[in-house]
Length: 363
Image (cartoon, rainbow, N blue to C red; front, top):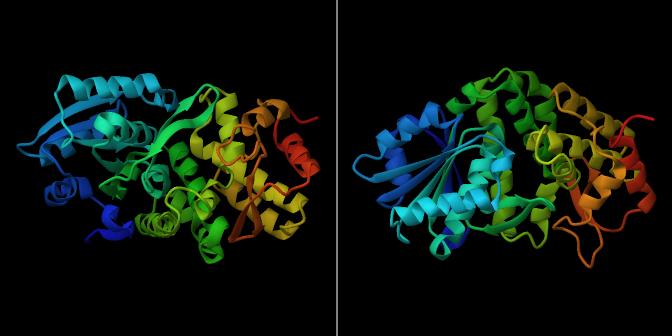
């Protein structure tokens, strides 16, 4: 079956997202999508042994150099980006070189940031191998790394030349990683597509079982939603902030725990529950809809609270969220399932009650 194609329309910087099985076994596709002769393939110790040889073999006479990093969120740092750039310099790569990001969101973010900053920007191609990366982080041009003061505080917008999402790579994904990716899929239904949210309620077991058709539909619809939002608001001046539903809470969890213990999607899942809870406390979301969100997240096997983080620590990390303006915290909340908003106009008591309910040990 030929690949499905979703296009991110950004005028001269438009690019395709290819979605399908066995795309990494298609040399014609890889060579068509990957520009340049000098190629830096960035991957990690989990993904590289599985798929790097397929990519390298398809590149023929071109000059690929591999960088294989340890797995984990701890790699998203300036020091690791510096290591990647050192390899580009050592191999005398010029501005016509291309960086290939083969892996999950961590690899895509840091490899993309290296490409954005090397010689003021060179081409890169996203080859995501996790569900979370295929539906979210590989699309839209956000690149960056973490800081001890907060998640993704250092970065740049740098659109890829293409995204190649081979759904067969999901067959090697650990169940926990698959569940974490579903948090971002659920997010899309919550922010703007109630019909997709209802489809997820009816097809969650098929997704958890790795059904290829269900996964392909979920990936395509997620990419369609994100591509449309990025087209309308590439630099996150308005609507694109809706894509951060659950992320302000989730980033606080990740930052407070030192980027260990929680997968990004798990933290987002807990954050989605917190956003729904707070939306109800603000009088915007009905109890029945909050329960729909809770049930779907529970069925997906996602955590709903962060017992190891105190409300005070969570509040401190949330205060430096990138959506804050004039030192006022802004949150993405829900007016309804399928209708998100960004607001600073919420009762402080609603935030405090939400933090108390979802952070820290039960009292």
